[in-house]
Amino acid sequence: MSAEPAGTEPEPAAGIGADRPGAVPPWRRRVADAVRERMPLWLQTRCGLERRNVVALTVLLAVAVVLAAQHFWTGRTQTVQAPEPVRAVAPRQGQTEGAGGAEGTGAKSAAAAAPFTSPGGPASAGAQIVVDVSGKVRRPGIHRLPAGSRVADALRAAGGVRPGTSLDGLNQARFLVDGEQVVVGAPAPAAGPAPPDTGTPGAAGAPTAPVSLNTATVDQLQTLPGVGPVLARRIVDYRTRHGGFRSVDQLREVDGIGERRFADLRPLVGP
Image (cartoon, helix red, strand yellow):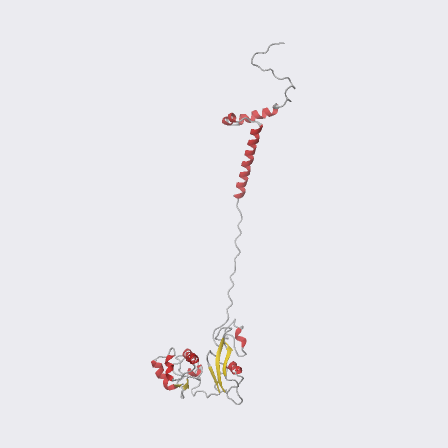
């Protein structure tokens, strides 16, 4: 037996020790050496490429890949849909203008409640007016009618006129106003009804006989000088609220009648 130099270890024989536990296969050693040569020096000194180091490095790389993929997925451009336009629906409007109603387009609803009521009456749908029908009718008294009713509707509500009663001078197609009194069979004023408003109210001239403030209609009051449709309606409203005129002096309490106008009307009217 030959002596070996001191400090040297004998090399394992071929096939001996390669299969014992803990032995590193030659190919793994070569791979580890190749990877170690490509690593930075500070990393070579801190860790060796053992199995646990390789596993830790693999897990770290996998986590980095997952985080990068998540960041890319959440930061991608997304398509945003524009909101659908909403069309505004215009409210339906009923025709409530004028007494003729020939130019109205949407007033076929409530104005047709009475047979003689034309679309586009002066009052709103669903309202009622109170009129006093007196004279030669079958059922005189207070009657409630739909807004937009005419004189003919008031006569029908009062049971019709008595036989032999003349309706000359009574405009049955005229619209009624709230608080109005319809007198049937009374003689018409001498001056007749006022013409359409073409200028100054009361331009048709003063009546020859005194006009009764308690029985005159809106048309009859308009025959007075200086009295138009608005002022005539105020006189009728005052008469309805106060139960009639007890004296001509109460005419001063009507809104729109001053001292000068009262002086002009006093000799032409009576209670």
